[in-house]
Length: 292
Figure 1 (cartoon, helix red, strand yellow):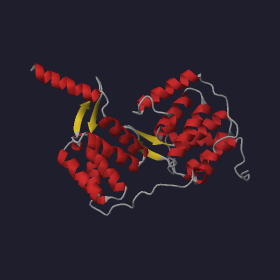
Figure 2 (spheres, helix red, strand yellow):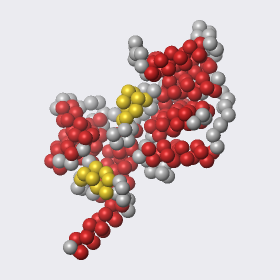
Figure 3 (cartoon, helix red, strand yellow):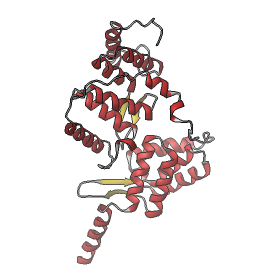
Figure 4 (spheres, one colour):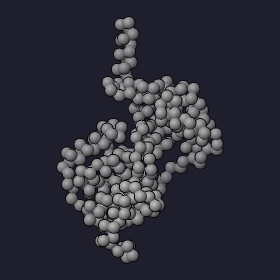
């Protein structure tokens, strides 16, 4: 019994010590959630090489467990990269292991991709090598950013605290740098900064989110089982209204409409908010005037 306890303690310590497989697996899930399928596939392969056995409820510290399902996510990333053979093999490996079926998200993904992989594979995802300055999103986002910055109202330490809390909420390592953080970190931080009364910093973060993920997304998946209705242009418009950047606010609302953030004939809270912001903005701009 004493030997068994020591073995279990050693295994627990090894997992809690943030072993190599866990680093790769977390990085792979972060890239997966951010839409980087190629990067996620590379990290997940490294995780599987370091730990070949999938498992549910692996304890990584005193209070946290993780469901380790590398075959499932490798199957999905391979499928979207156009490698149907690898995708189907990894999906079968996931089904044989039986781990993903015991996780609610894993079960749903298994069911979805089992059906999807019975058909033809999608076109391979091509990496966009276009220079950032010439991307089609850049002129649109430039029209949402005022030429001069407004006042930053929160103390720097308070902003750092909010950023740390948002990293934790997003399931990201505490030492993640904002420049490498995924879209959902910037979106959530922007909304928190807006709620705390710092619209200029909120605008900065929301523009970063829109740069990383230009299209709105209802029920966008972020970390684990956490989803959000992603409406960046509505939030950008609101921050610009609070700053008195009326032309930028109007441009953001136009982009919100063009990208379908608010479904036609919707009468929910976001639709009401859109109409309120539009009414306030139209009191300060002439929508028929030519753009500068």
